[in-house]
Amino acid sequence: MPFKYLDLTLVCGWQSHILIGGKVKKVYYSIWSSWQKIFVGQKIMKDLEELAGPGKDEKIFELTKLTFEAIDKASIKNLTPLVYSFEMKLLDFAGYRPNFNYQKNAALTAFLIDDYEKISKKFFSKKEILETGKIIQNFINEQK
Image (cartoon, rainbow, N blue to C red; front, side):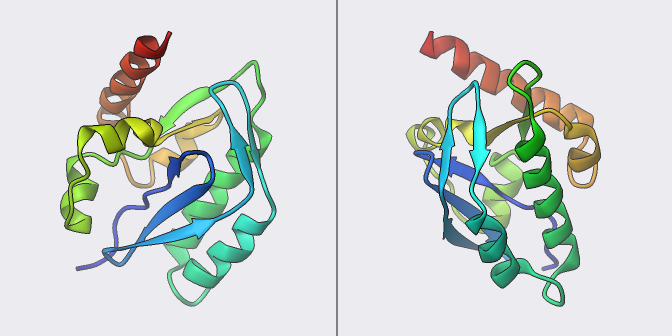
């Protein structure tokens, strides 16, 4: 089955899951995150180059680079929720279904960045982004 979706899931702020060819791989990197700020350490790009670098899958690498570039330049005052949905499509593709508590712990796979258009349109429809965005907004509201 050809690769279609990239899953970047923040888990406890210290690791990322990257779905490559139907297998979930973990990449550990230095990151501190909250709903207000995201700082990405340099190590992530080296890890991503090893897992999904040029010659392995250009589309995965390109999307990943765009994602982290956008996170890197996101400003505190202008953060837009971008969701790479870990819902039905990715779960079916990966062949497993984490329970709801896992999804909550993973902050429902949300990245807060300011330039979602050019990244999200490569893999997800506007409707999918908006629908998952509502789920995330509800999750944030529950935490207040």
